[in-house]
Amino acid sequence: MKTHSIKTWNEEERPREKLMLQGAACLTDTELLAILLGSGTRRQTAVDLARDLLAACGGRLDALSRMESRHLTETDGIGPAKATTILATFELARRLAAELPEDELTIRTPETVARMMLPHLQNLPHEECWVLYLNRGRRLIGKEKVSVGGLGSTIIDIKIIVKKAVDRLASGIILIHNHPSGNPHPGEQDVRQTDALKKAAAVFDIELLDHVIIGKKKYYSFSDELTSTL
Image (cartoon, one colour):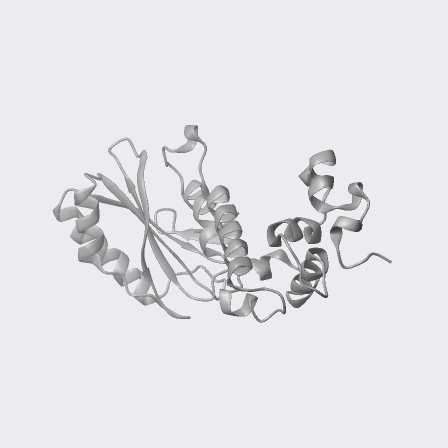
């Protein structure tokens, strides 16, 4: 039986050494998480601690990625430092998944928008509204979260969105928000806000190119007027 110190394990069993020898792909979720945690407690190794944390999430990384700091620290041995490391790691993963290759920074389809924003929005328990700012050639020049709402809705500030677009010298904008229910079909408020933003932006010669609603692995595009499966 292994002791509570990873240093006493065989070198090929230690997560860090195993990663260096065999590559990160050869490690289990528990071993990778143990490397992030860095250390355990007097009673547990980092691997034991990682295993307990994953067990609290039903063994699912997506559940772990949605945990807030206050929930992470409910696990014995997880303090603020370890919690922030975990939160930062998952945020980097989301940003990597949302990052478009250089040759795709010109946005011409709702599918590209959905693929970019899905990592940010699909698992949130609340609504968020984002805006993409594009130049005249539809090349992405900015991306920004503009509001956070509750379970069922979020209010967008049309004046702020248009001002930010003017400040960036954007020729076009794309509005994106999520439906935590998983159903991306727009409600009456979505339709009203889309129409109001389109009219306000047009005053400054800025085109609202699309409004994309993200659901659970599905999206709705106002420009396409259909729901597509990712």
